[in-house]
Length: 402
Image 1 (tube, rainbow, N blue to C red):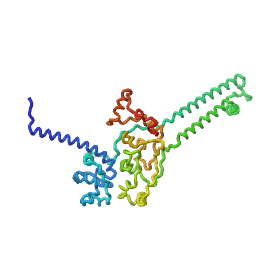
Image 2: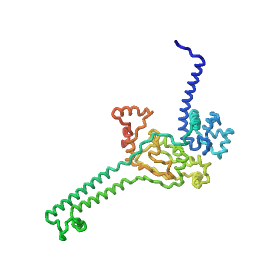
Image 3: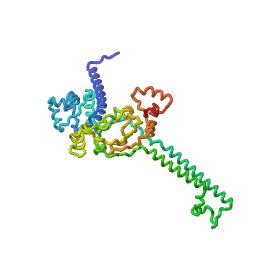
Image 4: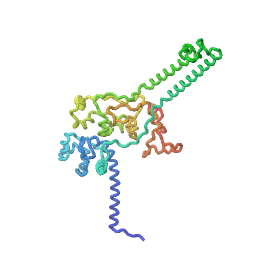
């Protein structure tokens, strides 16, 4: 027998379902908004009420209606020009520094950012604003596999020492058999090395051993020097403007993508233009001598002559987005802890062996990517190990060389 639900029960059930759906949607919006905020907003805004370049955003959903926020994000200059009092008060309060417009953000994305801000302030310990987005961490790349030559040379050296010992033993035995084990002074032939130095030097086996040893050591030194050609590990050039990554990326937690705009989307990461610097420094530390160099470059319409730190030969093809976006590698996988560097230096060797070692060890980020479904299926039939970059052509010459 079925019991018909009363209108009150139906209403309460619908209300609970609506609340659960809204809660799940809110959580999803906040998760999406977190990534958008950290990649686009955190350089100028805090999720707290503490001002940075722009105002702190705590309670923004209570201060302004969502329609106003959407219009402001899409085109802040138009809002100012329209005479909106709140917009003009903000503009004047923050030294008339115009906010960068984001016309491509959908209303849903902006609501997601607001949801993240509200969630960050509701949490007991909100994460620091501007932290880099979580990416699949690659295993630390092993050092370059150029040690095979050293092993070979050490092995040859050991063999030569053993041969030399054997030859000396034979000479000693022959000396005893010929009755010459005692010299004119009555001392054993090999008792004192200093007394028999001339005899050892005249020995053809000793001469050959010394020559071969010298050739091996000289060859190893030559090969080591040849392996070092074009490797600039530890290179930290002085830049025309003293820029601290430790301050900007570390203390202020500005995302790499804010300045290096192509890091997730382009073949190269891009060196930031002076205009990107001015997004903050038209209001911050304008009187600093280093910041004045940026103003000078803009006034003269001249690019800042940054010195490149990481440089691959023209014969090697490398795509940033393929590694950071598709592969989900963190910047530190190749560049080290940049957020701790006062002056950026090349931490990795960037040799072919170093890249190949990484391709051999790194798992393919195939989760949620239908492109890899068939490859993973075929790979799992013959192997129990995870799909590595080397299994999808990561060791083919043509992948990195034209």
